[in-house]
Amino acid sequence: MIPGPFDYHAPRSLAEAIGLLGAHGFDAKLLAGGQSLIPMMKFRLAEPAVIVDLNRVPGLDGVREQDGQLVIGALAREADLEQAAVVATTYPILLDTALVVADPLVRNLATVGGNLAHADPANDHPATMLALGAELTATGPTGERTIPIDDFFVDTFTTALEPDEILTAIRIPRPAPRSGGAYVKFERKVGDYAIAGAAAHLTLDDDGRVAAVRIGLTNVNYKPMRATQAEAALLGQEPTEDAIRAAAQLASQECDPSSDLRGPADYKRAVARTVTARALRRALERARAA
Amino acid sequence: MRTVPISVTVNGEVRQAAVEPRLLLVHFIREVLGLTGTHIGCDTTSCGACTIHLNGKPVKSCTVFAVQADGAEIRTVEGLEQDGRLHPVQEGFWQEHGLQCGFCTPGMMMTAVALLEANPNPDEAEIRRAISGNLCRCTGYVNIVKAIRYAAEKMRQPEVAPAVAGGGED
Image (cartoon, rainbow over all chains, first blue to last red; front, side, top):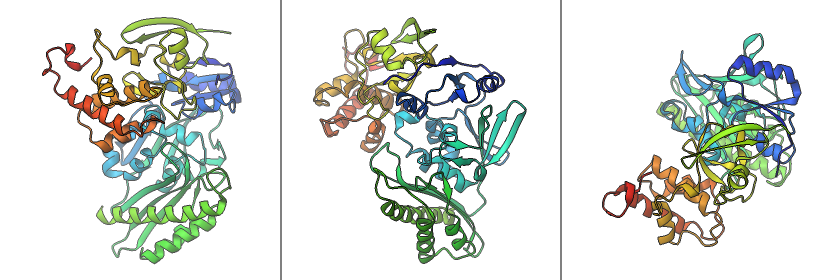
C-alpha cells in the first residue's frame, strides 16, 4: 500500500518545527515514531499534505528523573522506557505498559508521546498516564504551557493540542511512599490492541486504607477515560478483595465500549471488570511492598 | 513529483538516490537498491517479514519512509554473510531447520541477530519475546528458537572454530 503524496520537512530545531506547523495548519502532520501515522497513511485514513519529521530536532529524547518528576521526552521510544532502570524500580506501571505496546520491533520506533498525542482510545499509555496524573508540556509559538492529562483527551483522535503545538515532554510526579501502580491489558494476540485494559495507581495511608487512587481504562470508551466511580468507591476504604471487586464492577458499568471485531460490548465490560480487579490487586501488592 | 536526495549506508556501502517522500524504506531497499532479501508480508506493521536494522535497531521497514533513513546505517539480510561464510544465525537456521517456506526467515534472522548482539545468552522466554513481532506460519517457532540458541552458542565461542573468519562478529 502506497501512502498519498506529501511534502516532507525535517526541521533541525523546535522553533522551526513549530513554524512549519503554524504555516501549514491542519494540512500538516507531525511524524515522531510513525508507527500509527504511517499505517493510517497507507490505508489513506490520513492524507496529510505536509509531514513535519520531528526526529532531527535535538533535545527531545530521553527518559530521566528531574526535580522529583519523571520526564519523558517527545522522542523517547517505548524501548527507552523498557531499558530505563528508573522506570523498572520506581514507575513499574510504565514498564507494564511499554511491554504490551505492539511488539518489540514497533517499540524501537514508537514514541510514548505519539501514543498519547494520537489519542486513540485503543492505545495503552493514555490509561496509564491518567492513572499516574501526568502533566504534559505543550510547546507552541508563544512558548510552553502545561496540560493536565485529565484535560488532554478531547475526543477520538483529538487532543487539547493546538495545530501549531507540539507535545514536547510528559512529566510524571514521583509516587508518594506506599504507592503502587499496575497496567493490565487483555489482548487476543501479541501486538493487538486491547479488548480492554486497566491502569490503577493507589497510595495507602498509615492504617492501610486507600489515601489516593486513580484508574484509567483502555479501549472501552470513545476516548481514554478514568473510572471515577470505581475510584470514589475505594477512596478511604480498606482495600479488601470485596472492595476491589466492587470497584471493578463499577468500572465495568461506567465504561461504554462498542461492539466490534474484538467482541460484543457486554463481553468487553466483563473483560474491563476483570482487568480492573487485576490491576488493582497488583497495584496494591506493589504499594504494600514500596 | 518532488524528490528528496538521500544518502544511506546499506550493508557498509554508501547508496545515494533521489526519492519521493512517500517511498517506504522497504520499497527503497527492494526496488531502488535491488536487495530483495527483505520481504514484504502483511504491509501493515504486523508480520515482521520486512525487518531490517536501522542504526543497529531492528525495525519494520514497511513502516518507515526512506527519507527518514537519510544519513542512517542500514543492515539487511544480505549483509549477514561475510566473505562467503554464513552468519552464525544463518547457520543456525540451516542446521536446526528453522524455516519451512522461508518467507519470514530474513526478518526473523535480522531480529535474532539484534537480540544476540544485545544479549549473547538469552533464555527461551527472552528469545520468544524478542521474536514476538515476527510471524511464522510454518514452523510453530520451535525450530526457530532452537536455531537462535544454536547461533547464540556459536557466537559465544567465536575463536574455537579456526575457519570462522572474523570470529562470528561483524
